Length: 136
Image 1 (cartoon, one colour):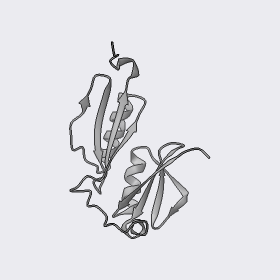
Image 2 (tube, rainbow, N blue to C red):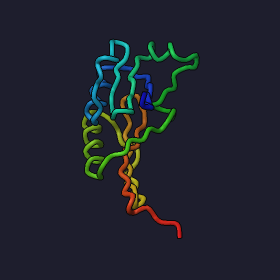
Image 3 (cartoon, rainbow, N blue to C red):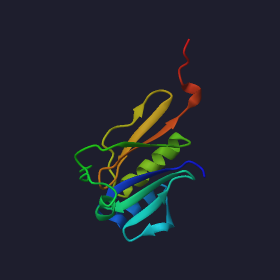
C-alpha cells in the first residue's frame, strides 16, 4: 500500500466545510463519507477528513481546540505555479475563507495563508527550485 496522509479536522458545519474545500480544489470521496464526516481528496496520497465535533471526539480524550482563536497546526499545500496559488486563494476567499496575513515572497518561494470557517490554517505555496540559493 502506498503511504498516505489523512488530516482529521473537527468542523462545526460539515456541508459548509465540504463546499469550501471543494472550492479550493479538493474532491469528495463519497466511499469514505457519511453524515458525520467527509473525505476530501487533494491528491493520490493526501486526504482531509472533515469530521463533526461529535465524530472527532470519538478519536481522542482531549478537548477539541478552538482553532478560531488558537493555532492547532499549520498545513501546507504545494502547487504548480503562482497563478494556481492565487486561483486557490481567490476561490477560498470567495467561499468565505479569510487571509490573515499578506503574501510572503522568499525569492524562491511565494506563500499565502488561507483559513477556513473553523480557523484551520492552510499555507498555499509555490516553490521555484531553480531559484533556491546554493550553498557556496
